[in-house]
Image 1 (cartoon, rainbow, N blue to C red):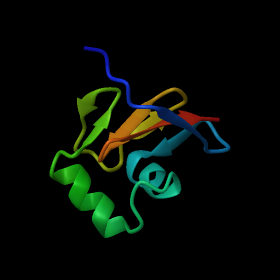
Image 2 (cartoon, rainbow, N blue to C red):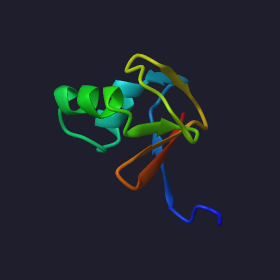
Image 3 (tube, rainbow, N blue to C red):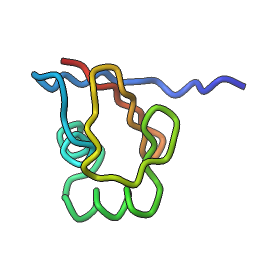
Image 4 (spheres, rainbow, N blue to C red):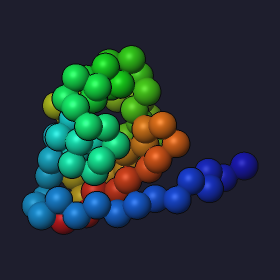
Length: 75
């Protein structure tokens, strides 16, 4: 069954951004501490795969999902 979660585009104003920064910028979580916990605990996926690296460099088109919300990196 295909995933029907709507994806929200978030423009970052550049070509790349770190996962932790993007999660705060996109409003998925409010604090760096919450972002760190969510990533380390495996609750965050990037392009459908769990990624536990807060410093992972995201590129245009990457989709980050947390708590049922999906956001796509846009320049």
